[in-house]
Structure formats: C-alpha cells, structure tokens
Length: 447
Image (cartoon, rainbow, N blue to C red; front, side, top):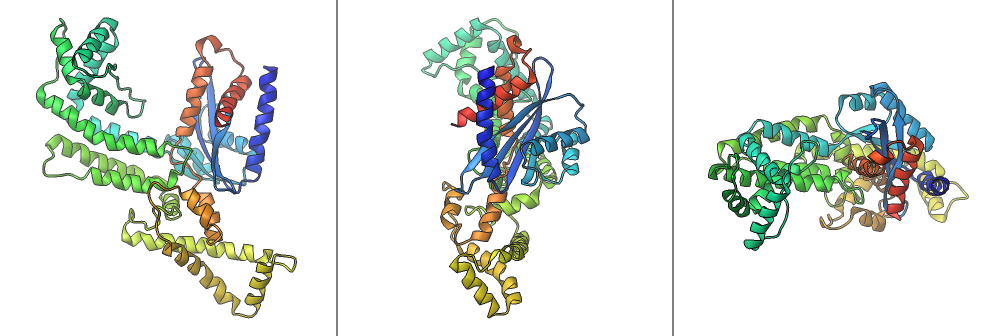
C-alpha cells in the first residue's frame, strides 16, 4: 500500500497540473453502494486542452456518511471542487434525474446537465409498460430463464445451434437497471428462434411458447429499440464530444418514432407514448446549453435539428456572449503587447470604437456561420484546432461548451471498476484505499 500511496501522489500531481491550465472543467457525479453497504460519491472531470484534446478522468470516489439530501450532495460536490482547486472553473455538473440531485444542482452555481441516457431509458421503460409488448416480453423472459438457469438446457440449445449452422451463443436476460438489455434479449431470441423451438420440442417443460403473432411483436420491438440503443451508446462516450450530439440524436429518434399507416395499434401506442414522455423529459433538461453546444459544433451548426423560429435566438445569444467578452479582452492590449495588438489599438483610436465593438461580435458570428459544415465522421475538435485562429473568441466558447458530457456514463464506468475492487473478499478495504485504487485504475488506463 505504500507503493500505491506514492504512485497515487505522483499521478494526482499530473492531473492537478492538467486542471491548473484548463480554462473550463465539466463534472459528472453519482452515488454508489458497495457490497459492504458503504456509500461512495464518484466524480469525474472533463476539459478540452489548449491543443484541443478532450480529457476525461476520475477525481474521486469518496466515502459519504450523510444521507443523500440535497444540501449534503451540494456540499460534497463543492468539497471535491475546492480540494482540486477548480471551483471557479466548473461550468456544468452532470447527474441523473433523481430529485435530490436536481435539488442539489439548484443550490450550486454550476449549470446542471441531466443525464440524457437516463432520460432516454426512462422513456423506454414507461412506453413498454403501456403497450402491447408486455405479455410477449413476459414469455420471453421465462424462455430465457429456462436456459439461463440450467447448464443442461444451455448445452442442448448449443447443440441445436451447431446443427443449424448458427453461432453458439447464450441467450441474454434483460435487467431493469441495465441499459439496452431488453433489445439485447429480443435480438438473441429472434436470431435463435429456430434453435429455441427445436430444443423445446425435445424437452418436457411447462413453458408457454410465443405464438406467431407474439414472435412478430418481438421482431417489431427489436426494430423499435435498436435506434434507442444506438443513441444511448453514442451519448455514453467520453473520448469524444457528445454534448453537441444530443439534439440531433433526439431529433433522429423523433423521426424514427413517427407513426406510419402500416403500424399496428400496439406499435402506434408505443411510439406515441415514447414521443410524449421523451418530450416532457427533454423540456426539463438544460436545452439552452445543448443548443449553444450544437451551434458550436461545425457538424451541426446549421441547426437543422431546431425549429426555424429558435435558430436565430441561438446566434443572438452567442453574439451577446462575444459582446461581453470584448470589454474584458480589449484592455489586455498595451504598448508592450505584440505588433498585432498595437495595430488593433491604433485602428480603434482612429475609428468609432463604440460602433466597432457592437459590430464585431456580429461579424464573428457571420464569419463562422459562413464556414461549410464538416462531415459527420469528422472530429469537431480537430476542426477547431485548425480554425481557432480565425475564430479566436468563439473558440473560447467552444472549449467551454463542447467539454460537457451528455451523460453520467463516465461515473457508471467508474463504479464498474470499483465493483471489481471492492469484492466480498476485499470488503474491508479502507475508504482511502478504495479511492486511490479506483482513481489509479482510471488514470493508468489512460496512459
């Protein structure tokens, strides 16, 4: 443990140096309970470096003793920010949509970013509970359980898969708390439908098999849930910009969930319920931040994912931010400054400076909007790295808004690591050692 402590101090110093030169830092946070029934708060940091690289790493997995009331949660986040000396740099804090977290965010000066992946999964759960898929899913779970709970049944299924020339793969059981597990379950069932029927025909069992109409429902459900799975995985990334993808991704889902004339009644109910629930939850998210992030992403800056009535408002807001920056940046020009700054000062003295300051933000916005959009496969940070000189003021805002993650998945990954460390045989680990081991696993994985 002495070596662990020394290594932790060394690696922590590197992270502190990274945060010291960062302009803006976004946080994500969530609580986790270990097998020894101890509560931990996990916090991750995200920022864009001067060279336009997105950095994401753990800050802490600290043990908490208090109940998770809003005031206690807010104070815990502040404690972490002060410990790492980034309180004045934090822009957003991403959490799930639990009431205590929403209330805690109101007590903080940071912007709150609800986890979009949580919102999406809740909408799926609500829509499934009020649709015609309930009985088909119930039967599917029992069929999967029949094979999952018996090695002999699993072996017979694998023999049938081999006889049919299919890949030998186990069935997947869906779990309410595991994202995309329902679509995983129905995909495996659809893919192995013939093998499952052949295996059960040779066995004596009390299962009620899916009828042909129910098999059709399971296939339709896979088609409905696959786009949701795709969006969830995209928004869960932390190695690339995800905040600016939220509005285009939700717009894509709304298009996919449009009701068609060929849809049966139960599919219409699912699509309608999904769109209504998702729209109501999206209204409670930080749409203002998401719109600005979308505008600052050169892939989506045409804002086609927004209604036409809202597009100009976004650019007006950005222009106001640039106007606020101008008075703070212009005094930096002095006689000791570089030649460009001296020339800028001379031109300002020879012209109507008030009107120039008002027009300049508009010019910056117009010049940026005139740039062509880049391909969806291109990296927005690479674009900003190449064009930050031409759009220096907007680049500062891009570094601020694009660093925010769209979900709290980075924290969930942190807890997955913690679950492997705090096992039954290691449940007596000191909280200090848990924190250092989890953080080191995260930091050294990066390197």
